Length: 335
Image (cartoon, rainbow, N blue to C red; front, side, top):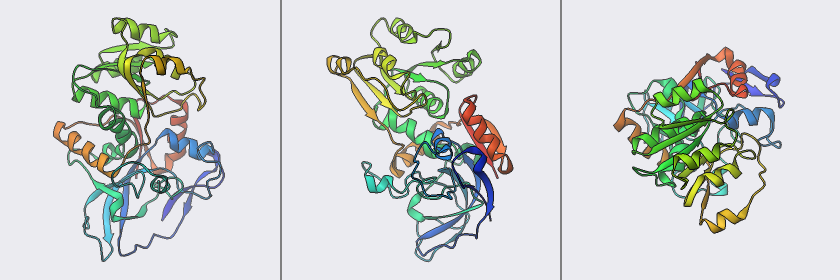
């Protein structure tokens, strides 16, 4: 079968290769992959900055959707013909994350989904909302679950709250959609007026171009009568965390889910202490979180935002688009 492998770190080493079709154990299923989506973690993995000690070669990507074409003798959750998605951490079914559970993630350290066929334990998948296409469903496992976990499971966002979202990548756009489902007010930032217009079309209430307004945290304060927002989804890291601290209200929450501008930020502890802030790290979520999210998506007939589709042979071009930061929502590779 055809796969893509990271043979050495760097985009130039991401190449097509041939591997034997995987054989399944009694508790496993064989999935013919239909579509996969990219996350920033995948780009970091390919470049070697996510885990420089990752053993190679590695099949990248954690997000994938496909049809079950064979099942082991002990499988009970799934039947042949079902459409399923892989969960990010294969052993994280429910409850809090643990080191041993987070050591079972696809696309590193486990081989990922960028292959014609993948074999997974039956517990490592979820069924999908019927109204979604394969390409739309492929966006859910990481970005969707991360956004859901950040603002719903942990964040407890509710109607009337105000949330600040940074940028218009996959997690931020999912967070925008989920926030509107619960009746929250959304402020979103971007360096592109075109992207901000698209965010408004999805329901964003206020938009800020941070390129034109580098002191955007002051505008956030102005838009909230000086109080600050209830919740921030922090994806920037080094260049944005201090501004997030200045944007959130007393006793508000910052969900840290990304490090797009770098992993090390100069941390001022005073506002965290004096404003009684909650800083919550988010590492995707469990299978239970995924299933809860899917029920909400199906109930509201919500459609994930797919910015651009690539073919399997265009995989490197898909990664190049991710590296450019030009996407709005999700980048998907269709088989």
